[in-house]
Length: 442
Image (cartoon, helix red, strand yellow):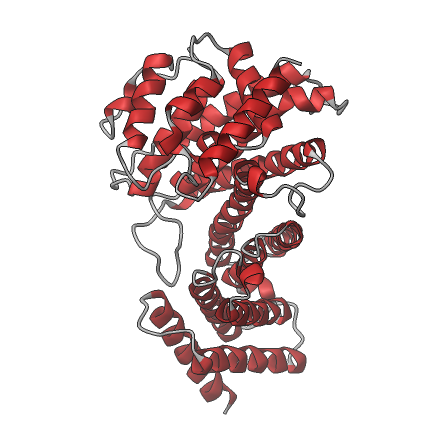
C-alpha cells in the first residue's frame, strides 16, 4: 500500500514540476494542493520512519517536491509588481501570500537537504520583500537571503558522502540564491541613488545622506562578496560536472551561467568603489589591512574580474539585456577610471573594443546606449543623490585622466537617465547636479 502510494506521489510531483517548467501547468489551487499533499505525506512518513537517511523512494519524492516548489515560487514571483504594497496591488499581495506558503512548506520538509531546489521559495520570499520597494522591505529581504544561505551551508555539510545528484543540485540552486542576493543589493542601491530627488522627506531619505551612504557601502560590499562566491560556485560546477544547455529534472546550471552573476557582481563592485572616500571621511575602518584608496582599487580590480566572466566561451548568443549590461558596465569603468586600459576582443559591439577607456570610448558607449530608446546608463546615468554624484566625480578625477567631468557627461546625455520621461525629472536632475557640484567644491 505504501509503495503504491509513494510511487503515485512520485509520478504526480514529477509531472507537475515538468509541467510548471514547460509552462504547460499554471500555479493554481490544484497545483498548490498537490504540493501541499505530497509535503504532508512526506512529513508523516518521516515521523513514522525517523531514520537519519531516508530510503531511495523518499529521496526521489523529496527531490520532486523541491523541484515543484522551485518552479511554482518562481512563476508566481515573476508576476508580483514592484511597489505592490505602496500601490495596494491586491493580486500581488495574494501572490506574496502564495510564496510565503510555499516557503513555509520548504522549511517544514523532513530531510530538506534532499529537496535542495525548495530553497528557491525562500529566494522568492526575499524578492517579494524587495519588491515592496520600501526600506523595511529591503531589510526583510536581507533576512531571507541570509536564511537561505545559512540553510545552503547546513545542507552542504549534511550531504557529505551523499549521492552526487543532491550535492550538484544544491550547488546549482545556490547559484540562483547568490544571484538574487547580489541583485537585491544592486536594486536597493539603484532605488536610493536614482530616486533620491523624488524621496525628499520620506523613509528613503530619513537621517540624511551619510546614513544612506554607509548603508549602501555595507549592502553593496556584502552583495559583491556573495556574487563572487556565486561565480566561484559556477566555476566549480563547470569544472567538475559541466554546464548544460537546458534545465532538466537533474540539472540547472546552463552554459550561460556565468553571465548574470558576472553582471550583478561587477555592478555591485562598481557601485561600491566611489563610496570608499566617504567611508574614510566618516571614520570607518577599511576592509582587511588596506587603506581606503587601496580598497577602492581593489573594488575596481574585482569588478574587472567579474566583468570578464560575463564573456564566456559557450558560443550561446547574448540576450539583449546582457549586451546592454556589458556596455553599461564598461561605461561605468570609463567614467570612474577614465583612461583605464581594459582590452577586449569581441564582435558583439564595436564600442566594447575601444581601449583605453578614454573620452572617445565614453562617447562611443554613451552613443550606443542612446540609440536604443529603451536603454539607459543604469545608476550613473540616473543618479540624483548629491553625495553619491560627488563621489563619482571625485573618483573620476582622482583615478583617471579626462577632460570630461561626470557632471558634464550627465548634462550631455540626459536621455540616458532611466527616469527621464517622468514629469519634472529634468528640473530635479538639474538641481541635484548643482547641489552635487557645490558639495565637490567644499
